[in-house]
Image (cartoon, rainbow, N blue to C red):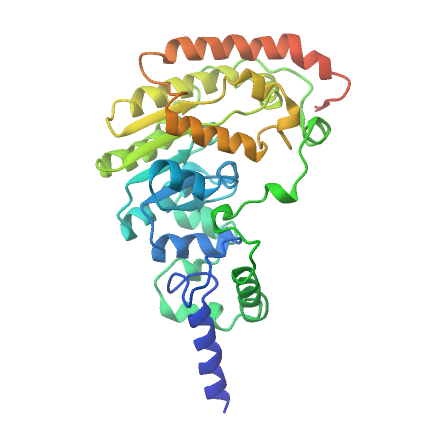
Length: 347
């Protein structure tokens, strides 16, 4: 009797498979993606798609349908919150291993370029990810098959969402609807240094910068038949204040220069630059903190990728980055003082 019960339980988990460890959704169920730490790797291995939306939490609030309709593709997200470059590249590599990927939409987080990449084990395992869903060892699957949370919470949640007319599969992993945005919220979530540090030599992080770009460039070189759309998102005026105070502002401009120089050498690459969107980045009503913005901006970015209206390349990068530098210092000297009595600084 006990053995029969164990078989039935395992069979139910395999059939419904809320983490998509074994297969894509069956029985006409929707793809309910709301738990990226557990579901992302399985969806990349088992779903049917030909495009990937990749990045950190900065890429979570895109609607897959925007890309599907404009670019004529079928997309899935490869998301790692707080993800470093090696994490995102690991997910994109996984996608290429399992599907014929034609397009990659890759959100580039410039802050990652100061740190050396890590191996999958160092990054995912140390962060507490369920590695039994990542490896190919069937013996590990007992942690999934006989998991009370999976049986009593994840499967019912998946079924409820699947049969709900309100659930939109395109908004996989979206969280914006649960957050507040606005100037007061953004400022309350911001802290930086009281003391302004000397500007760091732009070559101080050359080793980590090149190691990160090597990984990204490797994706491009290894998949010449795929189209890569890299985009650098619009961080707010608060982010620019922070990197100015930490002495890293000019490094980020230099890092962008190097990134564009290396990636624009490939015919299958387009790079879009949104950091200089003055109307967006100086309006804190668009943000919930120094970097995360309202979904309307996500849609604007997708539209610009489709139109090619914000592209940066070897021919225009010098002008764009010089203008960005001027804007960054203008914000620091002329606009940040307007918030002086509301900003929190520490030693």
